[in-house]
Amino acid sequence: MKRNYSAFAEDIPAYSGPKAARETHVDLKQLSAIPGHIYMRPELQILPSQRRFSKMPWLVPMLELLPPTSISHLKEWGLSTIFVLAKKYNKLVHVWESVTAMVELWHLQTNSFIFPEFEVTIFLEELEIMLGLPRYQRGEESALSYTVEQINSWSILAYITTKKNDLYSMTSGMHVHLLPIAQWITSQCKRKTTNYTAIAKAAAICICGVILFPEADGAISFGNLSIIDSISEGMKIGQAVLGFLYAGLTSAAHGGPFYGSVVALELWMGMHIQFRAVEDLTTECKTMLNHPLAYVGGRLHMSPRAWCKTAQLKGLHAWRQYLRSLTVTDFDMRP
Image (cartoon, rainbow, N blue to C red; front, side, top):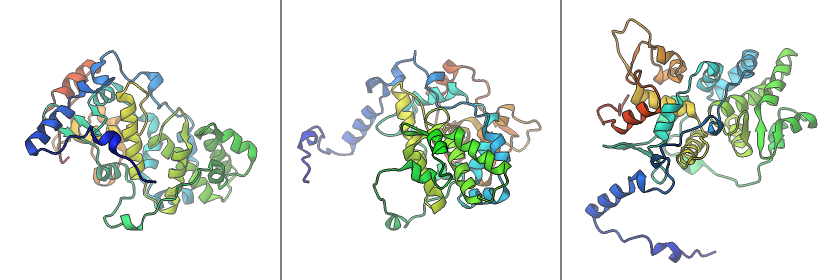
């Protein structure tokens, strides 16, 4: 079908040189000009009812029962860091005032945070490093193919169990519930079954659902279930994780619920805004002990003997003031 672009092409002004382009970009960066943006609604913040994150008391006990072979599968699929973060999940403290203050600086059109002197965003490359995910390599684009077909959650979950009662308890509407999957894993581990791959796939759904794709308390969408299922087939999911986080930031910037990987957002904030590694500190940074940065390894590993630049910030007002006056010097471009 031939598309008619005339309906909106008239609204796009012709390019009239770099000076006009810079002026247009300056206008674009005005968050106050975006209708309904949370930046101009200080009474709004991310309320508990809008947070798609809660403690999961079933998560850590289930992970501690996993057989070594299933854990090896998770590592082979590139989920080592996600596994560690999930095991420490109940120790993490989310500072929602800082998250709200960051959301207030999120631009819906440019997918970037707008600071007074500069704008930045979360790049795919650093998200993959932060979360230890398999990384896209240049040149792989031509090898990728996408098939658009209806997602059948039962066919994915059938690899775990074929019992209809189990499948009914695991799904409702357009979501998959993680608790029944965790209960199935627990029963398999206690019975010492040898369904190591199935157990690993089920565990991947739980840990990715909690760390990467939290959308509703203890549940993930069918679409994200399909993405998680593709991990065991060698698919790289960094783009999906980042896109989901962008969508959650955009939702919250309009006063809606915040979803997506808050762990990834806090890792990014920790690297660029909150912490700075130093050599001569003799005491541990208490803020760091409950931060996701304390539990990641590899290139991102950071000692808790660090300086927290934002330790004095208490409450939403203090975070707003700090971030809205942040300079390029205070933002670590290359942490």
